[in-house]
Figure 1 (cartoon, helix red, strand yellow):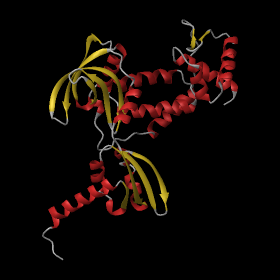
Figure 2 (tube, helix red, strand yellow):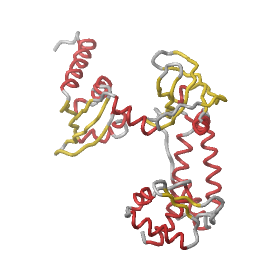
Figure 3 (tube, rainbow, N blue to C red):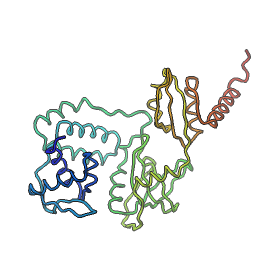
Figure 4 (cartoon, one colour):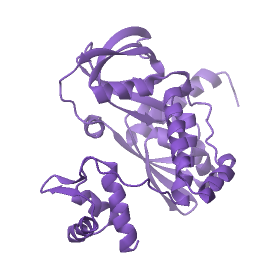
Length: 319
């Protein structure tokens, strides 16, 4: 990226947030802080009213507005791709809001970019698999995000899978994330006096109360990071025959896949799992084409399961 393009991109970045740190600009463009300071000075000399505070960052003076931003063909196509994901993987309200935003994006595109999106619209699809829920059947995501932004308590009726019970919960939400086909709400549950993970498809209904919460909760990123540290996980290494490796592509991430490397006609795959029991049962589906390297406890459990399978189904067979 040449300097002119970089300075233009920095200006767009400054418009995108109230305050932008110099270190964030340096990291994004892989440049030194000295170069950031020089580029910001160029913007100031061009008449952009920037406010810089040591240790805080840069901001554009309130009331200053710049002409609409124009998008490149690649950026416009990225918006279209994101629209396909939003349509399939979020709820009705989020999908409607995104489509509204896309109309505004399309409105400022040049004719060539508009024609490009028209032509690409039916060439990008996101297909749901059988195990993915119908997330569009509820409108929970926008309600949750509203309560987070306003720091308001959520009242929800929740179906707990482990106890098969419906309970009324009052929670202080801290964030949502998408994993393994489901949206999750992380919140402080007043009933349990602890942080809990609520799958949004198990929330039967929810409302935003008028009560504000003042407790300072960790950010979603910090919470997830700490949860991973606190959770006991086991490292699993298996050697898989190449002939079945492709069949594991859509399943390996559900089992904690980390990395893999080829060794001759096999692929060595490494996982981090918090359930050796679950991993053992998954492994048995293709075990005749794979070998457990570590841990020994997994080998022992697979052996126990195999013996029980033989006893239950083949005790009357004679050879």
